[in-house]
Length: 179
Image (cartoon, rainbow, N blue to C red; front, side, top):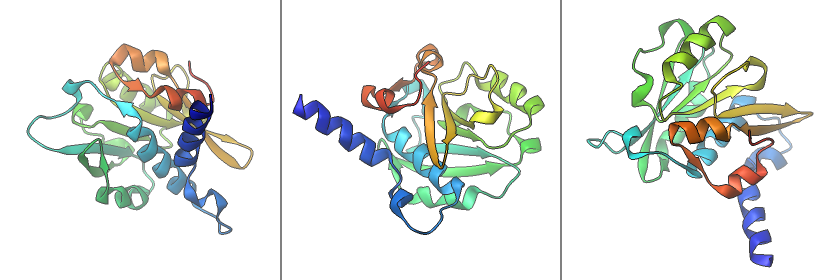
């Protein structure tokens, strides 16, 4: 019982961005970048999600806002032994082949574009992140949710199971909702 409690607390501490205790305000994109990185650490993809010829973990940021600099800081890190590579695309210039990415963050995408993006990636083993106010019948796996002054996340485990992505059970326990 005590071991289980210690495991749960350690995962919570790992997932809470270290700057949550900072007295200086932190950009929301920094918090989301930290969540994206930490959640990726507790996620397993099917082998088909990776290119066998390279050792990279590719993240696509789709946003018209220049937020990739925050996410680019992750390029010094690894996910599951793979070096992180971050690419940002404007909403109007999204590559047709998103299958080469293991994670995609859909930031502030217009509803009309979101439907087309979701349709192109809904059956692919891609860890997708989006903001709560943009989700309507979305296959996004992780949704950022603001609760009062805190940023939290919800996980769509049904969609994850359908595409072969598995979340650590400890992560599912601390998610807001596991659909």
